[in-house]
Image 1 (cartoon, rainbow, N blue to C red):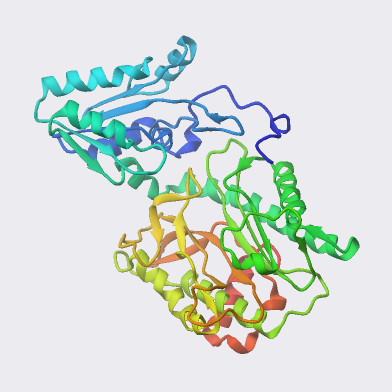
Image 2 (cartoon, rainbow, N blue to C red):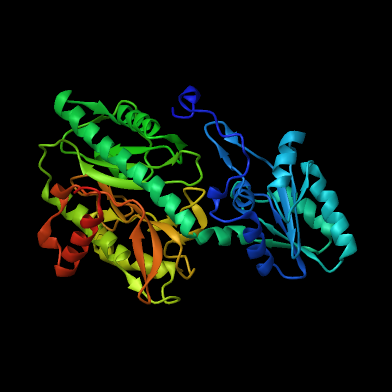
Length: 444
């Protein structure tokens, strides 16, 4: 849908390196890497996002694909980037990469590695081995094992991926800028939906999704980070629902709107979810209000959490909200996914998840989503309820140090559907948290 409309996008800038991608100079990133690489190691980087982050390369060229392909080898005090670039591009890139050797033949990295290991037999090659695209695949890993004869150390996460977790001030400023753009798209999309139901009486999930794409393009989007979710009625109970072509959105239905786009030069992703009641004059049911308010309480409890540095793990933050939602399984509603995921160059930076299985310690500068949800589900501990729907609320947040505490700040606060908030389910603390959140929204 969106990717086919290439004529709608202006041409990409011709420069290959731009500091806005990581908010740091290339040599600063190289120093950061070198300080974390042991003398006995050389690291292989195959993920284009890792390479983009290290070299400030333009990793994305929406809607056409990658801008620069390549491989990188980095040891302490030595770094080389291997890429099949044409001579003019290679010359411009070489001038922009202080501290790096540029080899304009991607296939030569294997020969360079063999020579490096021949000169230093004690070195070990560290390579990311994972099923995720961009990591060394199983066939290449088997080849390297045979080639290196015990000098291979597979890891689940590259050093660059761990570095990408922490965002500096320039990166956070960019994420806020793009987040504000997404906030505008969400607000306009919700108004469009309510107008369509009031004036025309009907609109399909597909038509609504296509309109969101059009609104995003008008706001400067270069491409989507994922297929927009516009699940209505029973489809809102499917967390990763893709729109149904002929499904009409009816007044009174719950609609889960989950969207994300790359804006401008596509340096950083965006992501946001809101659940709204379709129809301006529709009145929510008691169950709709109760489930929505429960999810809101979980979101506010996680968002308002403050803690000392080193004292909160991702799974503990997940549990803060999950514990409030667990009782609803007995009523046919379940929380079917993790609370959140990292966000940066990609919409899912998988080195960080906010989930029951994640033991990573949360640190200042981490950016991730908070997106609790409840869904009428067969996975719950009771038969599905009479009303089949789902609710999810999502913001991207940054963890900041303030007055000795780590606290969350939303990168794109957005108003809520206040018709769905049942105040009798909110205690004094939750009311205070809600008022504070709404005060930060552009309008409410």
